[in-house]
Amino acid sequence: MNALPRTGREAAELLRARETSASELTDLAIERARADTHNAWLLVSDDHARAQARAADLRLRAGDAPPLCGVPWACKDIIGTKGIETTAGSRILDGYIPSYSATVVRRLDAAGAVMIGKTNLDEFAMGSSSENSAFGPVKNPHDATRVPGGSSGGSAVAVAAGQAVFSLGTDTGGSIRQPAALCGVVGVKPTYGRVSRYGVVAFASSLDQVGPFANDVETAAIVCEALFGVDENDATTMALPAESLREGLSDGVKGLRLGVPREYFIEGMEPGVERAVRAALAALEREGAELVDVSLPSTDHGLAVYYIIQPAEASANLARYDGVRYGLRVAGSDLADTYRRTRGEGFGPEVKRRLILGTYALSAGYYDAYYSKAQKVRTLIKREFDEAFAKVDALVTPTSPSVAFAIGAKVNDPLTMYLNDAFTLPVNIAGLPGISVPCGTSDGLPVGLQFIAGSYREATLFRVAAAYERIAGPMEVAA
Image 1 (tube, rainbow, N blue to C red):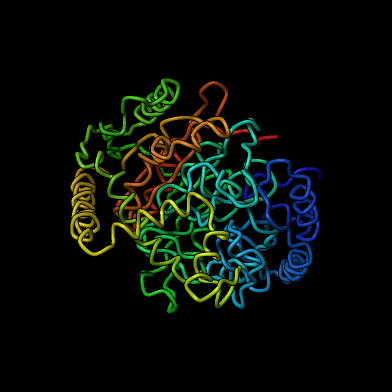
Image 2 (image 1 turned 45 degrees about the horizontal axis):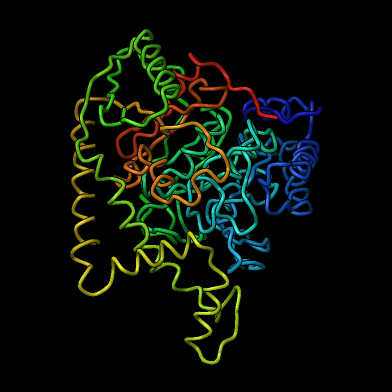
């Protein structure tokens, strides 16, 4: 075998038929990760992965094997891993080794999945291109001169390039769905509260959510089944009954009402992206879906709301990096000088920019004018989504207004960079689930189609995404 199985189902069938072993798949994944030329990996954990693979082989031989047992996966390096360095892509955490694993990691450990290593990202997940990492930019596997999207670029590339069967990312304003679109893979942002954030380095706590990348919708659903559930260590998680997210994958879209928000087809969207999305909408209609024109009038305010709430929460969360308890320490003449020197050398320019914005928005005299008002508009955005879902089963939109852009093209223009998340961040503001699936190409580069469902309606989300996936066919694994 010279290539990893493309999907979780393929891997499981090979493992259960004894045509390969978890150890063989792991060795192949390690080999491919170490040969990566896209800067997708920050660390490949050979010994840890091989130990997990041996344990998975024992479970497979005993017949006690969940669907993900023995399947190689990649972990975004903002998710804590016990005994394995976790940097969040930042110099300020260079060398930090957590004393415990995040709940999502422990749940995948319990499922027998094999973690190959940690993937590169925008520093503290602050970015839309994976260019802001302290350890260098990630390159798109379809064109190495272009970005893979961000902030979970390394995790998207690991799947797109066939270095892992699935991976985990985090999504605060589109950081799973946008790189999924630009790399031609599936990316899921679950409902806020579906997945524990315990052990994940905090960015913006009311927006962050962990989710999977995969080459197909079914694998993403299997991973979500393993991740979903209440966690006593995270008070935001919801105690909901366990459900099969795969049960309705073959049900199709016939009879479903799919809303098409007019505000998501904007001036400035690349023509090739719009053509691909319009063709997808027509294909869904031919399959029996009813397309419904809907309006989400506060969409235009989403970017402003997000870039007040998110930096404000980041400024509070990142105050803990002070050079005293863990991570980088640059000694100064006194405590305040130590803070300044540590943060000055440890944080990159994009992190500093957002911390300044957030601290300003929370400061005396500006809290009511900015942060408090943004939260009120956030409520309006959520209300508009709720009104739409009273009429339709799901929404269909582009994931990103453009395909992957050239490395360096937008890094010095923050506003243009932030506009890349215009179609994804409203989902986080409203706490809804969203999925991006491949939707053809424009100029030879992948285009993403986004489906959005009501809160805790992931089963519907996967149903419509799987239906479109059957229409579109599989995206080829990148070189």
